[in-house]
Length: 443
Image 1 (cartoon, one colour):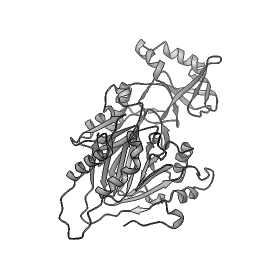
Image 2: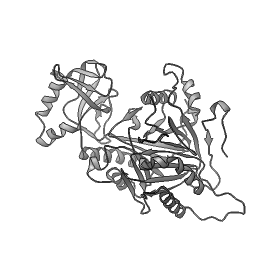
Image 3: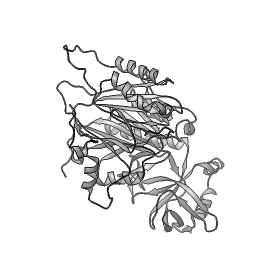
């Protein structure tokens, strides 16, 4: 039974679903490629019903409700979004609904295999039965953020979710929401130590938003704070490999790099890059034309791979957005400071596969088999990166056989790097749902 908060928080929900005797954790998921909305919903309902255990019910007894339904829909259905949730809710028993529209959809088909469907009509619905979960859903208007310099309690009251009960957060943001980076920073400020995973929904020309919250299509931001026995383990794969040395920033102004150094080497960013290019083979020199990025270190060092015993900078990969040929300066899509470490990066399919295999392999060794996975991938990945469909989900499926995967292709991916949540590009931001009853240490 839903518990409504006081009137001033009427648009927010706090829904603890405690374990019931005999309940079993379960993930049911379905994917449709139908081009008509009614046909897509009918396929989803049919496939989910086939996965639902048949249990006798007493006369008048209501069907068992899934704790949470996650819906990811292609923006090809943009004009029909407001009809989607009523159609689904009429046929599928679930307590609450959350999701977004995207430029593409990730889902698991009737064959039990995950698929990435880009730039085409598609609908993915996942039902989660989570005994022992504590779920707090919220919907935020993005045009009136609390003060980032004010107390964190203002943000907590604005969100309407208790951080003491949360361990992880799903977060979806409408592309029309202003100050998205400030929103993410504020949520980190008010909900520290809570992994946040999600993405920016797809753009469309309809007059309504791109987010699903219960029975409505909304703008702003929506999310779910997850606690109790359950948490989300994040994995952020940025899909780049470093070239050249790690440089220290000697001179910079806001987001413009003016002077770099590495050992005895010292020069403008353009001069440093030219020196790197002289060492690259022809194929990599060609990649630099269209696939060059800059890694900006988030902290001094983090542990390297599980077997090498090394320490490396924790880089946040950012776009290079301009070059000044007069002084060799480079503008990057991130504010930089003197003393910070940076390194040039190349993005290609091989680097993406290698990084993702390592990250997912580390996860598999640490946690075993999750209940489900969520993938929020950049529109620049998929076939554009790998040359064929399903490049990211196939890597996960090889390590986690029969794992249900759902998600969307986003206009920006949300996930943590070095303990801080960031808005990424060209990234695969994963969230693996784990039943982890280990009690959190008291603060």
